[in-house]
Length: 333
Image (tube, rainbow, N blue to C red; front, top):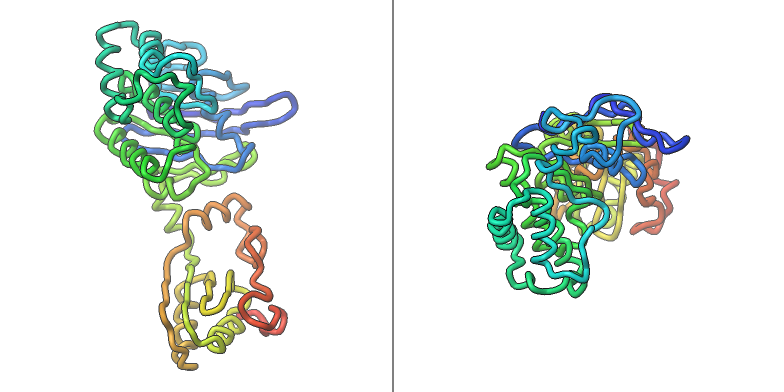
C-alpha cells in the first residue's frame, strides 16, 4: 500500500470521529471515500496527510508516519477543505511559493509550474491575482498545486467541487491516467456518486466513523442481485395493473412511466410474463443493476432492505394514478 490507515480511531472530545478504521491505497489505483457529512472522511484525509495524530492505530504513507515524519509530505499531493491560496498574489506566485517550499529548487519549480499550468490550462491566468478568479478557476489552481512534483500519493477532499461539467469530466480522466501512468495512488472523497462510477477502482463507505463497505466497485455492484426496472407505456390501465401486482416493489410512478426495484432475476421473469399475459403495449423497458447511488444508500442505511420510504425516497402514493396506494392490493410475495 502507498498509503493506509490500520485500525485507526480518533476522538474529538467525547465525539468519536473514527472507530478502528482501516483502508489502503494501492499503486496505480483510484480509491473513493464515501459517506454523509460527519461520517469521518475529512478526518481520515487529515490523518493521512499528517495534519492529525491518531488516538490509536497506525497511519502510513510510503512506509512512514506522516505526523512523526513530515518530510514524507513532499511526496503527497493534497487538496483540502480550504483553498489555502494567497488571494492578493498572482497564480504564478502562488504556485511558485508552494513549489519552492516543497521542492526547494528554483529551476525545478519553473519547469513544474509550467507543466501544471499547461495541464490545468492556467497559462492565460498566471499573471492574474487569485482573488480575481472565479471559484472554478481557483479550484483548478488548487488542483494544479497538488500535482507539483508529480506526487506518488494524491489525497483530495471533494476535488470536483466548483468545477463545471467539462472540467469535472477532464479531472476524472486525468486522475485515472495519472494513477496508471505514474504508478501513483489516488484517494478522493466526494458526495457526487456519478464521479465515483466513472473513475474509482475501490470504494470505502464510512458511516459514523466506521467502515460499512470496502472493496472494488465491481464487487459492490455484483454483491447485490436487486434489479431496477423502468417501464414506459401509454397504456395507463396496464401500468396500474403492474403497479398493483408489484405494489411493494414500486419506487416511482407517473403518467406513462413506472420504476420498480425487484429482488432477483426471477421477479423480472414474472413481470415479463404478466406484461405478455395482459398484452400491455410498451414504449420501452429497461432492466439494469441498481445504480451506485442506490447501493450506497443501502449500505449507508445499514443494509435494511428496500421497503418503500425506508431510505427517504418519495412515496409513490397518489402519483400518476388517481387512486391512492392502499387499494393496489396485497404485496407480491
